[in-house]
Length: 194
Image 1 (cartoon, rainbow, N blue to C red):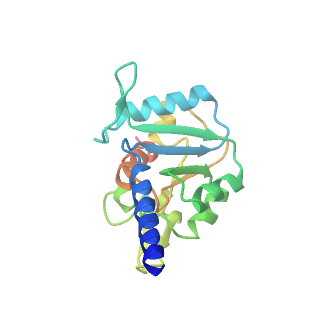
Image 2: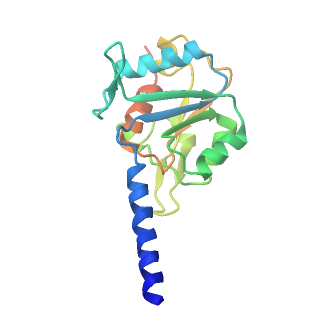
Image 3: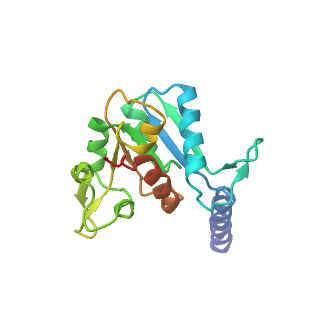
């Protein structure tokens, strides 16, 4: 009897592992979620801007127009509980964007990817410094979020004016954190002051 239950346990373990492997996304994309009221045509404009500006080098399906489809932009109305569920359930979201007031609370909780790669030099740009936090694991200070405002190149070139300050971050459970950083770098690049 012990031998049968041991074999059944081993069988269920193997099936669980195999089903987990089978459900992995074989065509990874960077999923960007805006938790802000954004019209569908604006979502399309942001998606086109990113697809035309960054090449991630990930295997992506081509669209009917022959473009690579490496990024999914999704927009939802702001509901704090939805963001909490996304993070709590470790969904496949790679970049979360919502109003700054709410996202600062998430920023203080940890569980985020360091965004130090997004800037050159020793220090982040002045407007990004409020989003530097101490990493609870290493004790070192890192940038964990970036603001998206009308002063970012993407919003400026698309002539978009957010109704309130937005903050973007990458949760630690991102499937493609390096690619997500590349997308976020394009989205958050400050406009050069002339």
